[in-house]
Length: 162
Image (cartoon, rainbow, N blue to C red):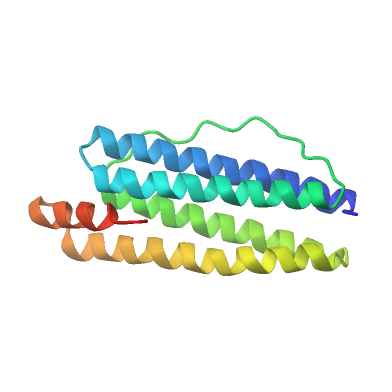
């Protein structure tokens, strides 16, 4: 059984994961509006991934006999100055999510909640990948620039995400 502290924290994390999904869907809308279908495709894939992360927590709470309490999701940002800013904000957001996961892990340790610690090991590894991917895209956009063929090539590359 989950302690109240851990249950409350996981419920909050579910909200944050759903906000992340909502943010990436908003970013996809921006990319679509700016004729960047590959960027939009990448963000839609990210939306699906974040939704799956929320559901993984949801199922974990149910499996442990807890009750998921869903809260309102904040409105995400909708305007971005450039594709580079879009991914700089993606990277900053992923670093924020990493800090949330680390805080949740610290709470699970404090509460001697070993099953939650095991679950969170997966999220910790996932966040390393998330930050690595966003960093690569930011660095590439900064190196290539956002003019002409370089942006088209990056858009094409991002459109290949499975």
